[in-house]
Image (cartoon, rainbow, N blue to C red):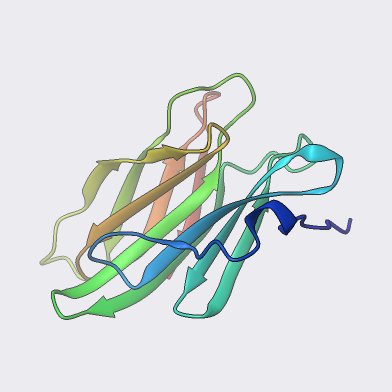
Length: 138
């Protein structure tokens, strides 16, 4: 399925930087007036999320970034239908010497969520309303 972003209302509006991270976001509109969220690493587009019932995945992606304060992991996704609260996100390290970290994600634009955690994490997991777990390796 192809999505057309309508950024004419947003022309000239730069993405908003996530404080203390190498990432930024910008709200947009997809075809049919659906909400969309653009994710950036510098000037590069990481992902474009569209609020749709066709894709029911809660966790849509994760990546690693490095700043002066160290390594960070960003996880993102679309809220489940009927769910207003963002999920709890668990960041898991590769080594046994670093503990997993559970963090509350932030809701963006009423349809999407983002979560950032600082540390040497290699996996991200979120739990759906039905109890199923979705995972992403970074």
